Length: 151
Image (tube, rainbow, N blue to C red; front, side, top):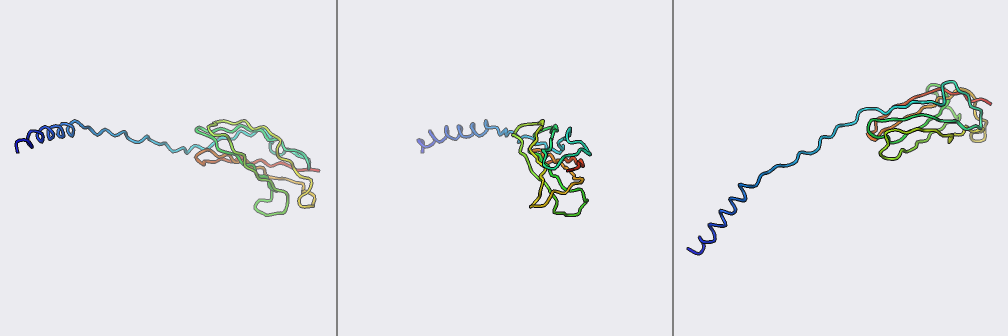
């Protein structure tokens, strides 16, 4: 019994010392602030009322910005008939924005107004061009201008 106490007693003191000396300081999780700020669109071209000839390229120039990170922008062009569905020409495309960008200067002629749609002449008249910008938190903002398509 004496042999057991010789090694048991120091082991108990060691365990007590380790247990008492151990402090539990956990690092709190980082505070995540939700991004609720919508991105911005500064549209330079086209301007409201600008005319485009059928078959011509549409120039798009704008500056996009966000306080955290941009994600993408979408351009939709549709006949200005306020809720009426038509078979007229319509355009929709989304462009991704490279990760980490807070600003983007867009300047391109990638949209072409067609002469015909499914074998029929594209209808001239007013079309609404809507640009929607999305940020990495899926906040969005839109800007719409009316353009004219002519022969």
